[in-house]
Length: 499
Image (cartoon, rainbow, N blue to C red; front, side, top):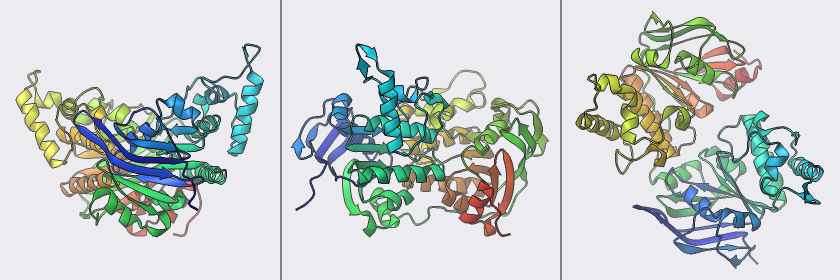
C-alpha cells in the first residue's frame, strides 16, 4: 500500500494581472522526505509556496493535507495545520530574545502573566532537539546567520509543524554551516517531518534531496527520484534546453594594469591587503564568509573609509575616494545585496539603468525622455533583459533580471573596471550562464573584472587568477592552472597544502 502523502496539491492555477504564474501544477510531499523544488526565477516556485502557506489563494485546484481536502485561508491557519515556512529573508524581530521570537504571537501565560520560565524551557528543549547550543535569552540581532536560521526552524517546530518549507536556506551560509543545516534536516526527516526544499544550488539536490520536481514558466515539467537523475538532465528540464557551457571563458592575453591595491588596512577587517587586476582578465577573490572580501570591495569603491594603503586606477593614485569619484574613473560595483545596495527598488528598470549616468547622458540637467528610451532599449536588447516594459518597477523583476539591470547600469557609465560581489547568488541556472557569458564578453572587450564568489566551481571556472582571503588578509595567489577546490579551501581555512 502506497504511503499517505502529507500534502497533495493538484491542478493549482494562479494568475496575476497579465501573468499566468501557475498553470495546473501538481505537487506532493511524503512523510520523512526532502522534496526539492527547482525552477528558474519566474518559474512559479514562490507563488506555489505562498499558496501552500496560505499567503495567496489559488484560482483553481485543490490542496489536501493527510488525505483531507481543505482550503488554507491564511498563514495563521496554515500554521495551525502544521505547515511552517522559512523564507530566505528571515521573519525575525532582531531586538527580541531567541525565546520571544520562537513564541512570538503565542506567548505562554500563567495566571494572566507571561510565563517566562516555561517559554525559555520549551525554547531550550526545541533547540536541544536541533543540537543547537543557542542562548534563549540572547537577542536575535547578536546571532550569526546560521543560528538565526535555526531559530526560524525552532519557531516552526514550536507549533508542531509536520511540513517545513525552506526557501534558499543555504544562500548565506558557509560550507560548515551548510553541513550543520543538513544534519538538522536529516534529524527532522527521521522524525517523519516532510521538507519542501527550494534552492538554486544544483549540487545540493543530490546532497539532501529524495525527490525533485521541476517547474518552468508556471508549468509542471516533471518529477524525478534524485538517485535516478543527473544535474544536466535537471538543467535541461529547468531551462528547456541544454546549457553546454556553464563557465564560458575565452582567455585573453593580460593587458595593462587597471586596478592596484597596496596595503589596504581598515581595523581588523582589512589588514594590509594588496592585489592587482589587469585589463582582459577575471581575477577571482575567494574565502570564507567573514574573510573580508566584501569589506575590500566596498573600500576599493570608496563606499567605506580605510586607515592606510593606496588604490590605483589605471596607474593613477586615487585620493579622497568616494563612489562618485570611482564611477568617474571608470569603476562599477555590483554588490552582494543588489536589492539593498545595487538598485532603487521603487524606481523603474529604465530609471535604474540611467541612474548613475545622468550627468554624462544629460549634461544640461534635464532628462531627454527619447534618448533615455533609446539608451535603455539598447541594453535591454544586448543583455536580453526579460521585462514587459522598461517602465516596470525593478522590485517586480526576477533575481536574474535584477542582476542584469545592475550590470546595465554600470555599462551605461562606460565602466572599464567591474567588481562583481557574488554575481550569481540567488539566481537560476540559466541566468547564471548568461551572467558568466556577459563577464566573458566584458574582458574580451578589454575590461578588468574582480569577482568575489563563495561558489567554488564559479571561482575555478571563470578566473584567470585567484586570490584567497582569510581574516582580513590575502593569504595566497593561485594561478588558474594550479587552482583546485581542495587548494582554495585549504588556504581559506588556514591549512598547509602542497605547492
